[in-house]
Amino acid sequence: MDRLFNRKKLKTQELMNSIPKTARIITGNEEKMVPVNQVKVGDVLSVLPEELVPVDGTISFGRTFINQEVITGDPFPVEKSIGDDVYSGTINRMGAFQMRSIRVGNDSAIQEMLRLTQFKCN
Image (tube, rainbow, N blue to C red; front, side, top):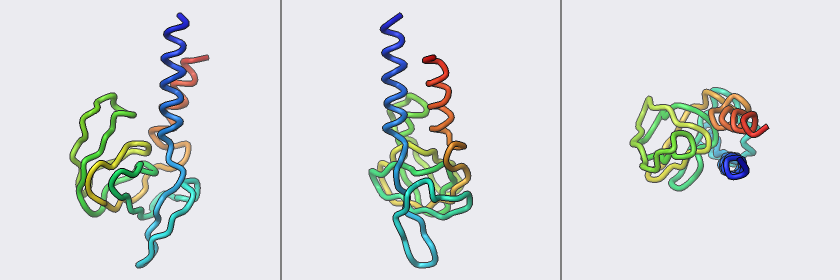
């Protein structure tokens, strides 16, 4: 039982470490780093290679490979391009892309997983 609890505790910590702290918002011709809690639904964001995807959204420009292991458990990156959804806490492995935010803050997939994991630990 302790081993199961420790595994769940590790998963919770992994999810918490995957929550991005900042986002790069595009306004006009400018990119500005802001705390992720300032991102609103509909904002256009830029995500560079090896960065965490800051919020849930849809790719509006570019193509890349995303490591979704924190969400799906699958360690192999998945190709993403215009129109594809990306999720907070996943890792952009290749190209830079732009995205439009669709779920932010506590509504994001990573926050929902964290709530479920914490609920199961209690």
